[in-house]
Image (cartoon, rainbow, N blue to C red; front, side, top):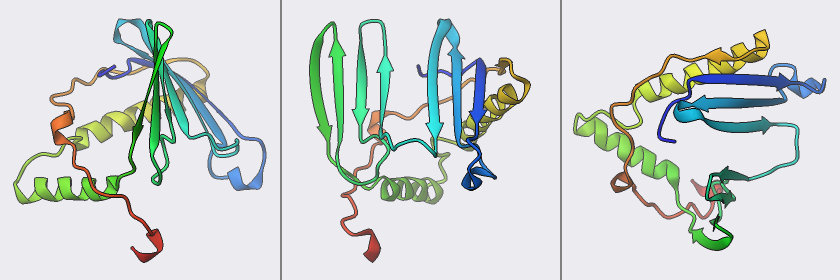
Length: 167
């Protein structure tokens, strides 16, 4: 949405297993954005592994498979008005790219994007989700206006790590 949520509803659950004594087994949230847009997510340490996400809009949907793995390619399936297209993205080393970018920012005295303010905005949303789960009702979030956003020109591509054991 290129925007920040203004309200959240959060839920957490634990199935009683000992391994989840210090962390929630599952969390879910509904995030309301400006212009009456909603995002919904569920995260779980106890469920079967699922490595994709879906976006659903008014004209179609997008599904990114292998979205969270650091190895292997990802496949994006876009369906608009019933027509489906697929694009495969080759694996890359995102951590190397991040280190190169942040090092360059430090050496050239530039503010990185995302900045610490971006991280703080994310933490505010997470805190609001936990608060909503605790009080069992929605929580309003004061809007944070972004100064800048990442642009495609900032992309740095690095080849994937072939054998993590040797790194």
